[in-house]
Image: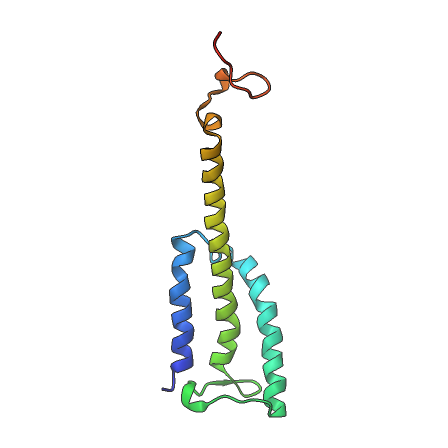
Length: 133
């Protein structure tokens, strides 16, 4: 199938997309940060591919790609791979971090229920709950 590589990359994006909206990864909401993380890595690996293809160390099966070649005879899909896979990894990392942060916050509230229910007037200057004598 000529577009197999593109389909796999699209599947990766679709599978991780809910992490942004459902779990609150907040990756797409910070495009400058996303670019600062993904673009340098993509550039390094693109250069790596350029050297490897030029030296004949590896190539790409034209039956599995779109046939669109970028400079250095690197298929479009390969360049997109260097963007999509780090994006998916970053989405996963940030989603796990968001879930863990919510879990830790909930655990703190459960561990210290007085802190949540005590009003400012019911505590002394040290933050201790005032008892009634």
